[in-house]
Figure (cartoon, rainbow, N blue to C red):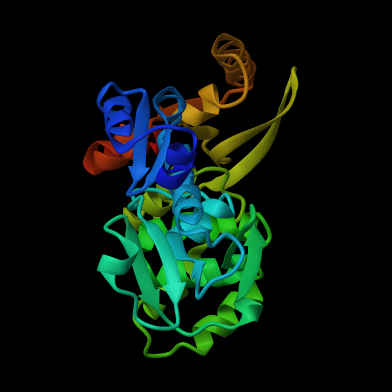
Length: 294
């Protein structure tokens, strides 16, 4: 990652930089900041959003000091929290109202008070603490998106009592109802954004609530299912792409998953498998589950 002044020191001029961008050898991350195109093209959406944060820090030379801190969705990404359906802008918290012209079109500035107790170094950048990040995001987002961040935040160590205190002290503030609703319905057992949204959808459609992360025994050992209705011996599994593509070879993961499922079928279990697209076909989703529940 280079600023324009760094490229000029390397011996390039503005015409050469433009030629490298036009030929797709360099990618312009934001005004005055560049990265090699092959590096950029190899990144997924989540990593691209994080790189934009570091590009902002690199471009503004404010990685450790300055009048603002990284907050909201940018802080959530720095903390490694699940986010879903949100913008990829750089979010900063500033005590004075920032100018969009000053910060750039890729930056969303927020004006709100904070103290050094709200600040923690994350990946070398000054950002809001985990609790403050969840608090800010939940008040800004719609309920399902806030619930995704709340579930994962509690899973990785956020203090539910501290968040409840923040909510109690924020009566009348914008978004506090969403914050309280997300707190009341959060479940740190959720292992992905997809599982959180599946649970939220079943609750909204008034489907009999299953047990999340339910453990059961088979001839192969103990297994954990995303959701299960124990009495009906019905399991619901969310097959998100990351489940198969993040850590292990795809063929091996799928083989082990199907092997586990066969062993559980022998024990009388039935399975419903859903994907992202099923969460947005609500009528078909509900009919499928109700039919399986009998």
